[in-house]
Every structure is written in structure tokens, then in C-alpha cells.
Image (cartoon, rainbow, N blue to C red; front, side, top):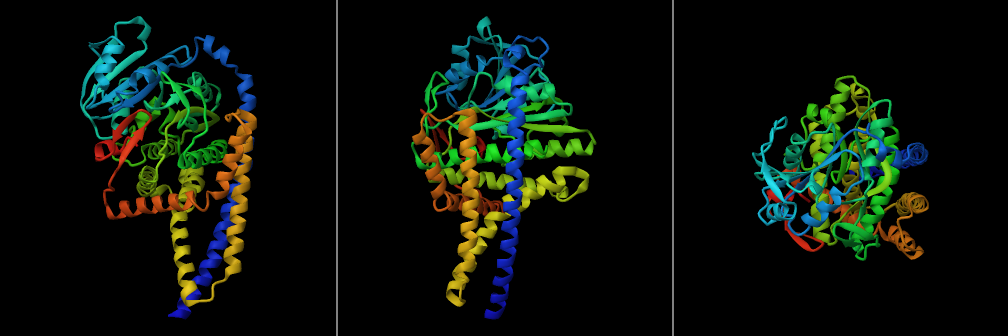
Length: 484
């Protein structure tokens, strides 16, 4: 028995070594690709000045779709921010998804809303729509409010909003998100200048925890005070700059954040819209849209903007963080399972041959391999003579590589976009990156493994309370779980 275990450990060491070398090599290629993509974006930004777009009558119209469930404490201030976005032609659609608080009442009273006769064509089936509201105040003539029966998910509410929209492009965001006033201008640019048909765009998200916010607008960007938001700040900088920009340049993006995603409405409808049974509706939608375009043999592009255009609140406690990441893990494995026929399928081009396998090998499998590695080390300590040199050198090599990637990400972010107020904040972020493998990464891995376990056993996790700035959203049922 010991001999078999020794043989297995030996083969596992070789496998892990090859796997990690492949991971490091691939991530290095992503780093180079990301740099080239950011450089191209910077040049494109100056070729198409914002002022020219704001004065143009030829820009495409955009519908901003915002699902709202029990957002009474923030809906008035935040909605005013959405209505003040800088763009020549847009509408704002708030979908009141059966709120049980005073969300709808506050909307009616503060924006002078009245029920209107509205031609509603249900291109994507949702829970019933009760009414549409428009403002009698010309100041709010861009606003449309959709009141519907609760559908149990952000996806259902978003679909109702898109059904009600009038423009060919829509932006889906969240009521607690705070957007820069030129967000629409930045995100729509690829739709206007790309030779290929752009079906979606996204941009960097940042963390609003501890930011100074007044009437739905960020007056001062502040560095998070608590540990978990700081770790997530680090993670966001690295993933948005080095991950998604690289995938964007290769036209292989499989994920546009649900907090800030702009879409071609026609392709969205053809793909069937958001799936309301998904645990990760943003990831699943992009995968399905790409699959549709490959099936149609039509050239397309999905682009990412390296600027931070949206601020959102993130979990600041261990329980809430694990809740969120467990759900992301279930969304990952659910999407992989549903679209498994794309895996290494040349019919789906770079999506099937590169992007989808990457998510299988380097996103889904890594937490499992880490757990297996820990168990082998424990058993080796008990029954075998552990190869300490191999373990130490492997860990050190991976740590130094990702430390360098993280450091480069922080420096690029600071030199180009200048999101931090002082050198002290940058040094704190670098310090967090050094302790990330010891504290944050194991918790994140545990959360993903928990999500896998819940998915395979069909066990419904117990949810805590999702506390946001100034208000509380209960997370204790399937109905509200999907708004995390």
C-alpha cells in the first residue's frame, strides 16, 4: 500500500511541476498581451476625444438597465447619479423587482412618476410586469421605471428591463454601483470604431468601501480600511489589468462583470438573454453569446476597457466573502457543465480551444489540486520522507512569480490611472500582496471548494446578512441570494 502511495506521490509531483510551469508560462503571455492591449487603448483614447462624442448626433443610443430589490435606502441618490451620466442619447430603466420595502414609493414620490400605457413586448419571458412609470417632470424625462413581480434573481429583473428598452445597446449595472460620469462614452467606443461586430464591452471595477460618498457620487476615493476589502482591491487590480485586458486583446473574453457590462441587444435576444437559473449569469451569458456567434460563423469581438469606471461595495467579513465566492464557484462549474461541448472543440475557435479550456484547467481545477496537494503533504509527513526541497522551491518560485505580476499590476495602475492618494496606500497594497498567499488565498480556495461541494451535492448553503453602506439586505432565501 505504501509503495502505491509513493508511486502516486511521485507522479503527482511531476504533474504539479508541469502544471505550474504551464501556468506560469501562460500567465507570462497574458502579461505581455495585457501590456500591448493597454498601450493600444491609451492611443485610441486620444484618437477619439470624449468632447467630440458628446457633441455628435451620430452616436448609438444606450439603455441603462438597473435591477432594484429592496434598495429604498440608496435608490434616490444613486438614481440621480445615473440620470446625470454624460452622453447625448440614453435612457435609464429601473426595474423594481417586487421590493418589499419602500423602493417603489420613493421612486414615485421623488421623481414624480405616473403610470403610463406602455407597449411591452416580452422577447424574453420573465415574471409578470405590473406597470411602467414615467416622470411628469421634464428633468427626469430619461427615466423609465418597470414594476414587476419578484422573479427570484437579478437575471429575471434584467431581462424585463431589456425587454422594456428602446435603444440597440444596453448597459446592465447594479443600483449600489457608482459610475464615472463618462462611463457610457468609454464603453460604447469599441462598438463605434471596431471593424468586427462588438457584442459586449466591460471595464474595471473598484471598491467603494471607505470611499467618501455623497448623494450617490464619490467625492473622494479612499483606500479600504478593512482587511478583506484590501485583499479584494489587490485582486481586482491584478485580474482586471492583467487578466481581462489580455483576453480582450486575444478576443477571447469569457467574462464581463455583472456590475458593469454593455451589450448588443440584438445578439443578447438571439442568445436568449440572462438565464434566471444561473449562479453566475454574467459568465454564462458571455459564454452563450460567443457560442451563438461561432455557430452563425459571424466575426465578432468582446472588448475590455482598462480604466476603472465603476465602484461597488464588496464583502468585508469572512462569512460574506465565503458566501459570495461559493456562489461564483457554483456559477463556474454550472457554466462549464452546461457548455461542455465547447471544450477543445475547434468549431468554436479561440473560445473552444483556449478560453474555455483555461477556465477548466486554471480556474476550476486549481482549488482541487491545491486540496489534493495539502492532503498528500500531510500523508507524506506521516508515512513517507517528504521531499521538502521540491515543495519549498515550487512554492517559492510560484510566490515570486505572482508577486512580480502583482507588483507590475499595481505600478501600471498607479502610473497610468493614478487611483491612489498617497505612497502609503501603494505600500500597504504591496504589503497585502506578500501576505495574500498565507491568509486570503486559503480562504478563497476554501470558498470555491465549498461551492463545488454544494453544487455536486445540490445542497443549499445557509446565507448570512449582506450589509451594505447605510442599509441592510437580507440574504436568507433563494429570492435574495442571487442579488449578491
